[in-house]
Amino acid sequence: MPFAGNTDIETTVSPNNADILGGPRITLTEDGYLLKVHGYRRCTVPIGSGKYRYVIYDENGLTPPSPVNYKGETVENTYSLEAGFSWHEFEFAAPLLLAKGTYYVMAWGDDVYSSRIKAMGVAGNIHWQIIVYGVAPDPFVSDGSNANTGSLYVEYRPTPVNVIRRKACHGGI
View 1 (cartoon, rainbow, N blue to C red):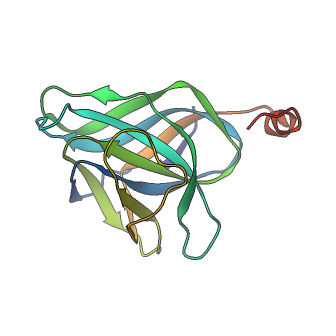
View 2 (view 1 turned 120 degrees about the horizontal axis):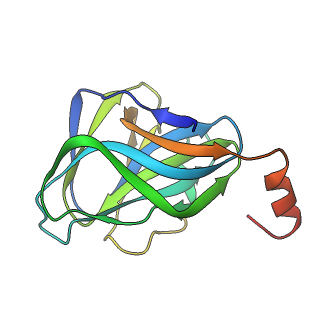
View 3 (view 1 turned 30 degrees about the vertical axis):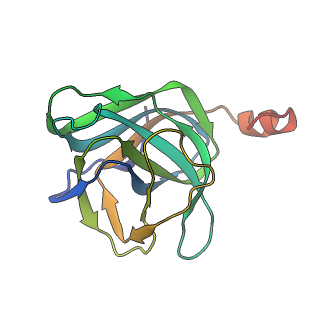
């Protein structure tokens, strides 16, 4: 399966508080079904319920870019013990169909976690919103951004030509 995002394990540790929805953007070079999100992170000993998931937003196309519309989310993973730094996998309940373009892949949890990041020099590459874990906001309203990228990628399956155009004509997407 093809991948989009950053498969490198970066060296800087970024601690994240609970109830912060945030993450980097990735670019799909072709239409496809998102199957999984892989994030290199450490999930700490739970203070809350140890729940985490990823939420996908499209990009607004402005300069600097920002996430805006909710597209879908992974199934929630729950950790009862500390999970050390490693690649953690989050699946979608059903494949999420997206057109080629740029999207934000936002980590969210009700507990503290750490991820690995690297400065990229691209304004608006990571955005975050301080919001209590629960129902994903739509639209996304950014509380801040920076020029970093994360150790995070998506696994996807390319679609046959015209699948998205046909769905759009028949009331899909």
